[in-house]
Amino acid sequence: MTIYAKQVGETGERVVFLHGLFGQGKNFTQVAKALQPELTSLLVDLPNHGRSSWSEQVDYAEMADAVADFLRSGFAADGPVHLVGHSMGGKVAMVLALRHPELIDRLVIVDITPGDSDGAGEFEHLLGSLASVDLATIDRRSEADAALQEKIPSPTIRGFLLQNLRAGDDDRYTWQANLDVLRRDLATIGSFPEIDATFDHPVLWVAGETSPYVQEEDEERMRQLFPRTRLVTIKGAGHWVHSEQPEAFVSALRVFLTA
Image 1 (cartoon, rainbow, N blue to C red):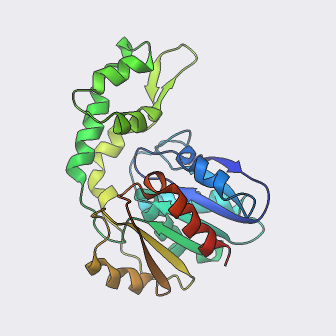
Image 2: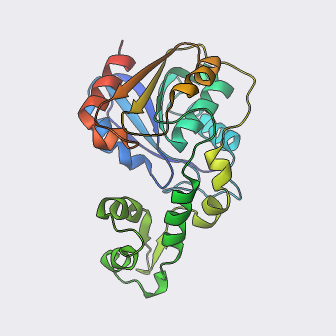
């Protein structure tokens, strides 16, 4: 797999960001800028998203290994780096840390657990809505926005999803996300693979106060795999912690990653 990433900053310790479903590395741009000059950030597009290559299936081990190989050949060539993952990217980050612990110093998992995640119905609806847009008739991004308005009333959610719409050299629009594979493999995205390993480095587990993705019963499994886990709940945040409460999120990252 070909992995695309963008670096933000040139000083301080190194940290890698992995986005969630429908996202791209650039979703963490403002967070990365706010962490300068203490941290240099690498914003990764995961497989089947953004400018990274597509695969024939969703497999967390394959994604984690692809990112690990990419880091080993570049950003982490001189030693371990910090790793931050949100939602689906959090699962990739956990698998990467368990399979390649020599690459990771400190780990931050944002509003997800190493278990099955609910929400397949919502994601099925969003993926189906995007796939229903006839891109052959779209000449402007605003037309795609209008086509989605009835199925996805929230302008915030539509704006986030439409970041995946790209105009080619012929001015025709295509989706950067691999909608067919992501939709078919939603059950895999919502699951977590069995891994017989532990990651014995410091782990910050960040939960959104109003999000349903992290529950009290998830702590036992989390601490089995990551025994040095510290759970922090961000007040006033839902699942999109880094965009809903950016100042609190950046503060938590800075304290943990530069300690």
